[in-house]
Length: 220
Image (cartoon, rainbow, N blue to C red; front, side, top):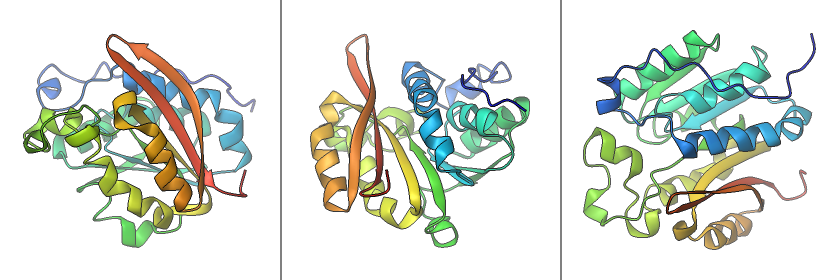
């Protein structure tokens, strides 16, 4: 069977207006992350991934999009602190022929011990909007966008776990906003043995978004 080089946007017509009162609607940042994965698809395939994890799946469109092209040779996992997001993620996977195991947990708290060192592709579109700290984690929808100081309070809690999560050949794809200080993020990860590459940038309204890819130094 020929490999597909384009990633089709998953069907998410099953997501209801009531769902969207509680979960993050697929938006420009979601589609930018999908586009970056499509751009990097040959690089991903070269590493022959078998386990993919998305942290904070929301609607599940990103992990589903990746699963639709990598196929059933991979195991697909997701986490979200919102139970409704976990349910919708699994529905999105089913609607597009991708089997996703989604765990309701804060970032990777309930999965890190059993997946440590096994994740070949790690995806994260964090809450990145700069807000007062007290807005972080307030209600379903606020969880999806309120990032606190520098828009980094949620992301900075995940970064220390990335090294433990990734396999030796693992890749970490991260969506960030210019205000999140991507240079500092890259510096933090480089101090932990990772190289960083900016795969794609896109301005959407006032937001200057970019997708960063991290891999262990020497594993390119």
